Image 1 (cartoon, rainbow, N blue to C red):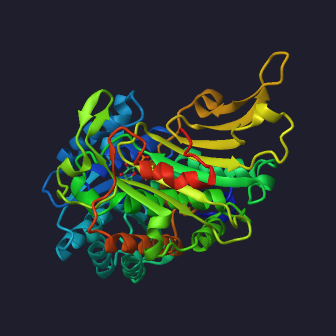
Image 2: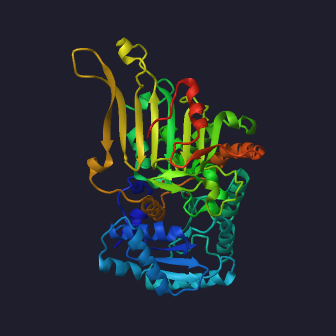
Length: 512
Ligand code: BG6
């Protein structure tokens, strides 16, 4: 039997032991979309394989198309086999899991559809003993969020009832500060903040969770984690893929909305925040939001000084020729949507005053690599004269993906009679140190939500603070949209402007 008391006990919750959530039903709005197939169902299945789901569990797909429970089950079984991180499938486990999958067909606007959903949930609560706990997952295009939330409210399904009710909301959460505020207002007119879980899947990645452990479970790093020792910080999220048939969506986003407003500013917050007084939702998020609020604004008229944007053009990748962004399906021929951004920002607080943070992200770069690199100041006095001139200062690189690990770069003496100095790496790799695969981000986050732990989800004020920074940059671009964007050939590290941008103070982009 699952330990219900433990699931709701905040003191024990602080320990974050591997626990089994209380019985519940998860309802996925937008169940015919890609996210459900590629991420959500495989994540649920992996949780079941790891014995982290309660036995009393059901999942209901809610979408427009008419289909039977059996058809939906069949589709989801295929998806699990294709996308699950596990490559071996126990037939009994698959069968047992598939019996917990249900489907409800309705448009998002149809009041009757929600009444039907309520009936199905009540049936499942009896047949599967899911105890009235409900987790709604909004995996639809964002324009449907207000409608679904309103309808759930009107149908009386948003309040905590016999059990708990929670809602996970996918990104993008708004498209600028005003729309994010409005969406928050709509959501919070129906749900309490404690019921709302705004998801950013980067926070569920093992290596991202390790940022705080690395900083705060070790005594030696925190004392040097500040303006006295750090010269600058580089955060890179490089993707080798292009827009992969998502041109229509990407035209409404661009890398600023797609990656920087959410994933990258979350990485920044974790790297730069003050130590919280506890590893708990309010405490961690209180510190994160202070970082986001401390970012010095980049005003529309300053955008060119602090931000470089560009688009990939025709190029080659892995020996294959690939189209430029403007040739991708769903992209307008004179699009000004950016597929690459490099920016410099400052945090106006005591710890980081004067330390630049360089962020860059792009599609169709030479490789997939996410990394946070802390570049320390050079040694104050160079004893070894000519041998150390031009030597790179210490760099601590937190490799988020795909080659997960941490590297410290430092100077060492080359063996031999003469004193010759070279930089070398000290390396930690997850793969070799732990020898077990990490769970997928969605597994961790869905499980946390079922346990009621919102530490790894973004709070209302965090989302608004990040849009507060991003919105004036978008406005600055809007004013300059009569000019085409700089281009970089697919498969290269961005436009020459990005190199020139970081160079004036003698810095270079790190080769990740
Ligand atoms: C998503 C973006 O949020 O993150 C995608 O919409 C991007 O455009 C993806 O490719 C990257 O996620 P990951 O986990 O592959 O680094």
